[in-house]
Length: 229
Image (tube, rainbow, N blue to C red; front, side):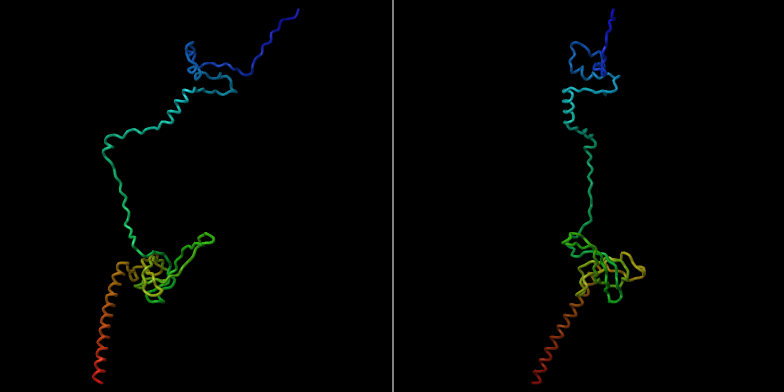
């Protein structure tokens, strides 16, 4: 007589869903309320837990994200008091026809009230489209002979004193050798303009007197010629 054997087949993965809340299992409950509470069995380590969201919940989240968040209204006290900030910019004279440069005095004392200054700058190459360092030597006017060789100065253009001298010293940035206190003072632009106006006025007076003298001399010479003839 053969024994009756029964074979049971077990599956490796369990596909049973267990609701996390048994109180929701009611015959009249909707499927949308059951699915979010359903999760995989926690004993299965191979399949991670996953939460489900319905189309209704995703639609509500999209509406909330699209609606802009309005800032809270300001209090009544802050609305009445308004603070105004004004930025003051220094006045800039747009009619100035001179430019400022920095340079080093190469030679001083060889010419009266004139020095040679080395100005370093950059030049742009049109074909290579690159900038390269360059240097230019200027003849700068020094009205009081207050510059020494090696001084770093700031000079400006637009002050023509001769055919080749068209720049004038503005200030001494870094003196070399003799301190600034022991040198003649560098004149400012208003002082130079006042001195130039005074010289021009004197020159006009001298030129006027010379012209009159020439006319008088010519008249006297003509009278002498008439008397002699």
